[in-house]
Image (cartoon, rainbow, N blue to C red; front, side, top):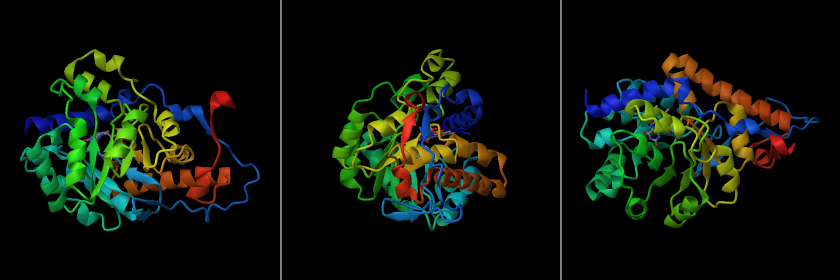
Length: 336
Ligand SMILES: Cc1cc2nc3c(=O)[nH]c(=O)nc-3n(C[C@H](O)[C@H](O)[C@H](O)COP(=O)(O)O)c2cc1C
């Protein structure tokens, strides 16, 4: 087992620890306005939506998690099979173990399980600053028949990770370069600190296809890396960053589709993401927990629970479909 595999295993183990979850989830501070005179029926509300040219049954995406860990193939297969049933996009974790030549292709080779869904690989922007690695990334995208690539930004995580990068120069150039060389779908995301307005404007200019906000409130990578490195800064920075709900409000008028992720726990949070202006909600930790606990049936259980919760919120708010949900009033609790 290589060093990389160990790190990926540690990430899963620590992410499953409840202490990895941010102290406050801003979604709890937001209320959707109910419609007491709703005349909708649970059976007819329509949760389907479109994302990057493809129709899916629910506004959800399986956010990037794993590849290269001992359990990665099993986790990815379960989540990909669940995602395909709802035609929702599925993203693997970082493909850096592939680039390092580890024998882990099976962890990432998920396209055949996803005939109905968009399939994304994932890489750090820091890795593709290197031209040879950028080219290798594009070769793997083609070989594994991915529809696109999710590029992650994770300055804070790297700073607290014991073996992490300390120099972040060249990231914007790397994004311009991949956009120039690759005509497939590019999503850029953060991993828990969030994408701010200034960065979103730059990403829009570069011409990426969507932004996954990866805001504060869910899995805290500073806490996880702090635990790995016995670095006390991990705890201090646990709640650093922009809460997911705040980012969605800030980016409400962005031209790009915005995926609300970071701390999404259930279908009510999904409904709030849409009412706050997001195109999809992205979920990581909650799906990992389900994949770890579950035989195949219970993976379907979590997706069906999320769908029922989303529909419940829609009927209670009088939103017949996702377009209507976008216009449901949502306020911070203090303002009510
Ligand atoms: C075990 C685990 C591994 C992750 N690995 C990656 C990764 O390789 N690349 C990436 O962009 N994000 C990665 N993430 C971050 C998630 O995609 C997501 O942005 C973050 O966990 C916040 O969402 P959550 O609160 O729903 O967990 C990982 C998350 C978890 C839980």
